[in-house]
Image 1 (cartoon, rainbow, N blue to C red):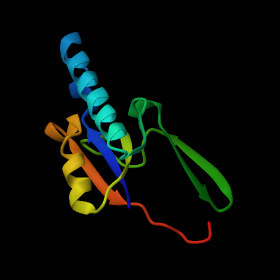
Image 2 (image 1 turned 90 degrees about the vertical axis):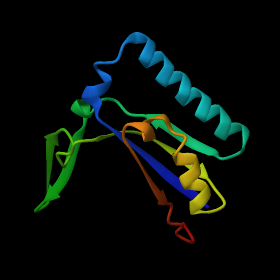
Image 3 (image 1 turned 60 degrees about the horizontal axis):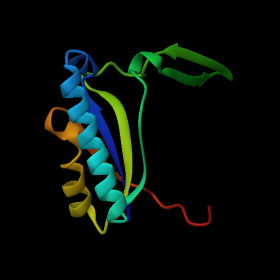
Image 4 (image 1 turned 45 degrees about the vertical axis):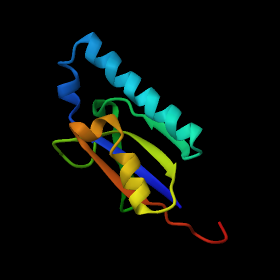
Length: 118
């Protein structure tokens, strides 16, 4: 079964990190990615640009309406994701706990809905 691990943390906190902290964090992500690839669990994963680059899109009365930034104001911002193949939710939770941001942010784990015939 596929699970999406959404990575949330506070962007502004990362701005205070030293170069060494940034490199250590990236090394931890690279290590997690390599481990899940080697185990056949990695399907996809990417980091996202900062939330300030986001554009929210809505259609209201047939008109496209855009606003800068995310739809909701939150303490933590979506910073990236992993799409993982896991035998069950327990395995997905165990993998999510290894994502570096789990120590200072939140990892939201959601099963992928399989739509037959599409």
